[in-house]
Length: 135
Image (cartoon, rainbow, N blue to C red; front, side, top):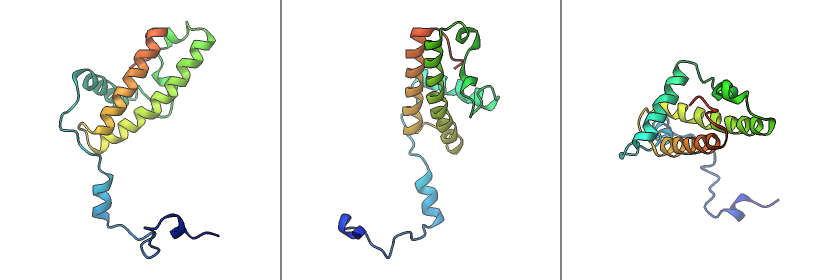
């Protein structure tokens, strides 16, 4: 069996799985802030989503909680499947955003990128199917 040092010349078995100081781990876990802030559209969207999480309108593990049922129920099976698949993808990312927001409720690079990604998915799907999501 090949040694790890054969693949990685920087590998040091003396530091492998060494404990990390809790203060250093706290610094490493904190997302980097983006001082430029959000653009107005993304900030409005983010505030709307966070309010719906806080008010339990969006359930963090129920993709159907993102669906606007009055529109969703009028769709054919193919479009319902597409809406369901995108709801699952969106909810996973929204849960990540919500978790990051609880750590640091300010603009971070991760939140900005993910909120823009979600908004673009929503706009793309709704251009085809109507107002199928509640966000």
